[in-house]
Length: 91
Image 1 (cartoon, rainbow, N blue to C red):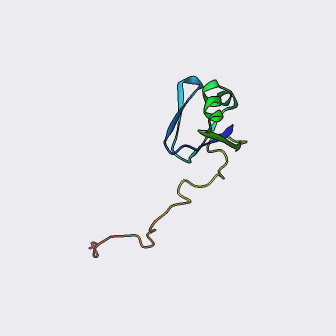
Image 2: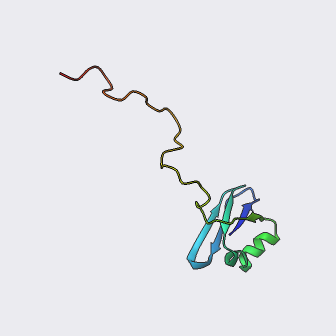
Image 3: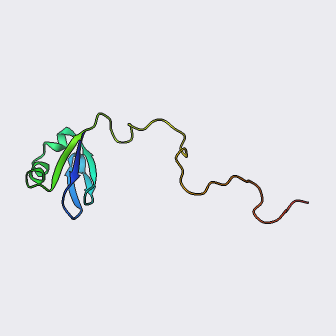
């Protein structure tokens, strides 16, 4: 997989093999296969400076993450007290 970055100030769409499309916002990065990177449309964007090749990735999307529980990296307030929210409703 090859990493590319959108260098233009506007979002772009890149047509990929298999009828897929990669949407990249300004300054954002994405991954394309070596097969897609060799397509004439991608090479034209690369040639005129709209996109740049950042590097190569050894893994597919999401495979580089460590296996963790689904909510291991939650944000925001975490409740420490469980139970009823208002008053004592027991009894």
